[in-house]
Image (cartoon, rainbow, N blue to C red; front, side, top):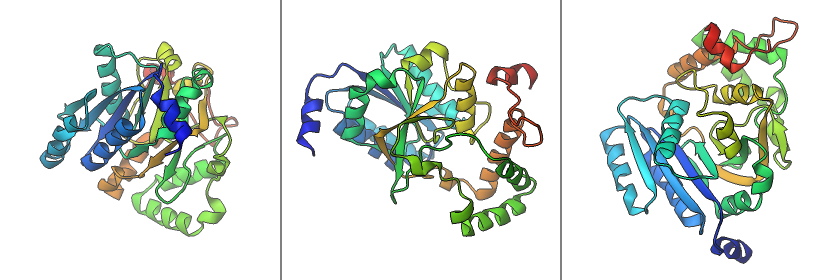
Length: 305
């Protein structure tokens, strides 16, 4: 470990961090995430909340051993799988009810590993990061792919129309997916190639977000109109309603196992979840209008739909 990093973390820290992670039938990864927080956070005060979305009994037994890792860990066992953002909201509400003071709440999947550098960067750049409600870290997969910045600007009309075709029929979506994989180098969005530069972005990858005090001065929870999928867009609309965007900061690196949870869900069910999201998305954005985004705020969704 870098000695300068160790010196920084051995000094008494002035910040506190809450972690809220969801778990669904992959408790080993949850334990790994919590161990990375304990082992690498130094003197920074951390409180972790695990929200289990109705995992199997053997997976729950693994979570029950979490107290061996250390204190300041709470586990919420949902009787039903409430989904991703709704699960995170349960954890956020738990932190509030317990009156746990936090400067940041890191929310995300359980398939994450937090390094010492993550905590050093979060503390040393707090003055900059506190200007924004939501900060997106540099998520790096096991094979070295950077997943942020996810969407820097806007989505093209062509891609929007392809999505509409994709959600017409499941088997049609399979064909489009195969073609997309074959032609990946030509048609994939390359926003993530700008991973070295801090910037404001339209959408940050949904596996992990850092919510600041500014977020909680504006909102009580994450907007979550569906079970799963589309979280990046939903949060972007929530921020947009108050004139904000995601702030991507590359110094906050987080290792991401990627798709560890959704890999347990059948491809057809994932397509159905995505279609539900797409139907909501179309309430706001359509390639068949002169201006694709109709300007509706996320609060308009409650009023009309």
